[in-house]
Length: 251
Image 1 (cartoon, one colour):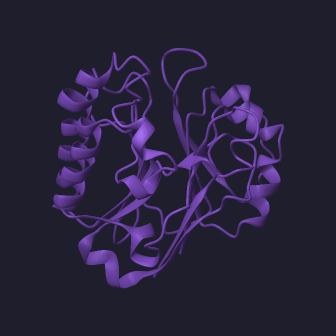
Image 2: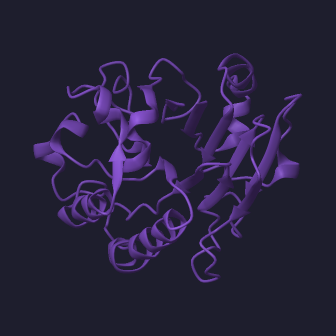
Image 3: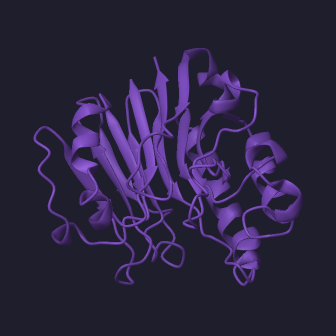
């Protein structure tokens, strides 16, 4: 099974930049999208054979997730963390397959001034971890999406000058570490130990061309699934967003 995750940073804009052609040619079974920033009726997609499930945010043009599937094995989809106070931004949508759950998440950005750091560390991250662990009591879990954190120094081009900045604070990195310590595996690091592999680049001129980026988009899996991993990749050549897609192949 081939899974794709992509923060499209506005699905309407991404559609105008070739999104549909990417979907038609990617040979994926499920595609998880973050930051769709739209309602279903606002997006024109011609994708025969695909089922689209949405969890848009309540604020127009902000946040939201969606999941595209052509996998007949999907048993059900369900939005959110089952917490009305945390689900207004449409940040999570889950698909249940016969032998694992696929959780698509767009983790809150703490903002440049760190104004949402307390919310992220004290409220969102613990609630999300509880949600994942509750699912794991039923069957293994695959978590994918924009986790909005570079975990280690190797995961961004300029760690020294970004230490303490949004996405690379000690608090965010430690919280992500706790999620991994709770039983999840960073699949990309199973196959690649080197640096220079990023999934997000600033929109400043020349930054992406020089590969001055951050790895903040992930596929994480329950440890029991590790023997079933076949590949994990960053599709840095795919444009259409300031993020690129990431892919996972699993038996």
